Length: 427
Image 1: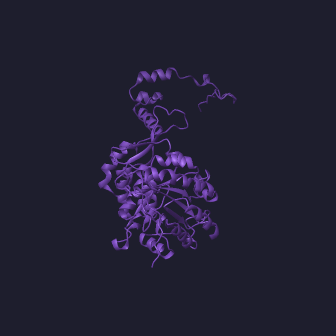
Image 2 (image 1 turned 90 degrees about the horizontal axis):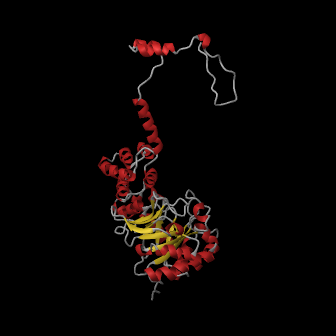
Image 3 (image 1 turned 180 degrees about the vertical axis):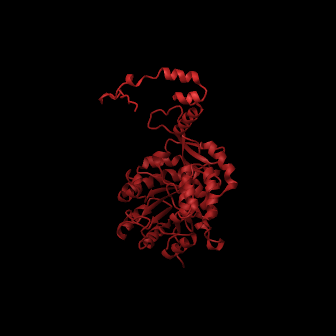
């Protein structure tokens, strides 16, 4: 008789990671339009970009009436105790409550159990899961004891996961998961994973690189099967991450190494249609994908800087359109550079709403000065020219005021006083 596979219960409003190929959490590349496009092309779930607990704490949840998106916003204070009257509002996180329903996992950067719970409570009611980032090697994360730094402080990482499981899961009925990297030795990785799977989490993602490794270095999958087996012993799902190029490859690699699913990062950043199975046609041409991306970005009022950054990754560097995109200062400029005339009218409306493509205050001042100078009539100081122009009265006055050569001041000796300008003699 076959022994039943152990599985921890999945909370009613949570999701099971098993059998899924998902979009990885990526700073800048995991914003709302990127996630929506990944889902459109076949991603089973999407992770948002790592959001620091302190960033989400203090935000206000609002619904954007123009886009229908849920946004967590805060007023920019610029370090002041009280924000100025004209302070702008920043959108810290945004989601589509319809297209991302039961599909979005919020990834948090945190180094404190209490703060993690406080931040999670602000967003847990709208997402399918909370994931703790214990794998990001970038300084903005590790310098605060977050990300990959948690791999070296397992007691803190365990405390964070337990706090979320004990507070967020019963309150919001969603699961908690964690994303890690492998350690230098299999023994170190095993010891860490055994502690993590005992915290009550429902899923674990392992990035098959060590903390010092960079994306250009090939993923190391030698420890993957061991990690997957430890997860299965505890009854939780295991996703693999690192050098997965497509949905089909993700499923194949997961089966080969005993994992339950896979996570795609870099390949999705370049072309999110990598989630299309070969049976549905596979990868689409970049031009088609870019057009879809621009339309999606405008529909959710995505920040122009983020849209421009993503397009720079998606448009091949050798294409003329790449130069046009990087030079664009507005959505209209992007549409013109990519040859998307059918989107230009919508782009113009959004540009006007966001104030894009408009000259800066300094440029406006320079333009005003140039216009004033152009309108000011030219005043000639040459008596001959005035006489030739029929302005004899002005010519006589100018000649009358003109001193004889003998009366003109000779060149002054150099002076150290910068306010005294020497008068030059006329040759």
